[in-house]
Amino acid sequence: MNTKSNTSWDKRDLRNALGSFGTGVTVVTSGNSQSRFVGVTANSFSSVSLEPPIVLWSLVSTSPSLEVFDETGRFVINVLALQQMDLSKQFSKNLEDKFAGVEFIEGLGGVPVIQNCVATFECKTIQRTVVGDHVLFLGQVENYVYTNKTPLLFCQGNYMQVAEALLSN
Image 1 (cartoon, one colour):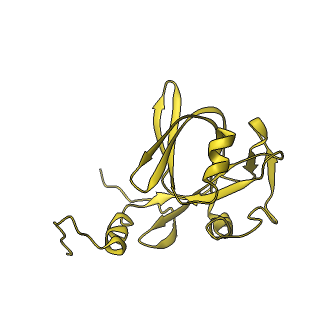
Image 2 (tube, helix red, strand yellow):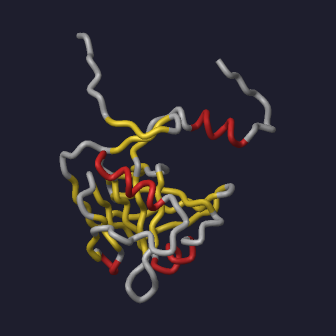
């Protein structure tokens, strides 16, 4: 067991510890044809409230996409399916056109909605807060779609897939 208890943690080591919590993988998109389309791979997605329906996600404050997320005031959480690992990798890179070869439609406000995902949540930003080295976005869900596909997961620095647990009664 690796125990840490001071305030001068090594960032990489702390990131490794936080990575012990498995999450789904999303691509968060924004922008429209009047500005530019942006998208980032994120696993910092969570439900906050059902009434009204509110979700959150965070983006590093130095991201070159931040300005578009702020100006558009909208975002889409695209929950990736197991077969979309390549999209996770594509949107995590610093590419000039992250949408090259990506199948998407323009949703509410012209924001790109990636096709064939496990779920998509089209949101209007209702609050933006700087927290440490990230910007936290809260969004009210205005439209959503979901399917029964297998989601892509990420844990301990690796992509994973769902496995049913055998539970004894």
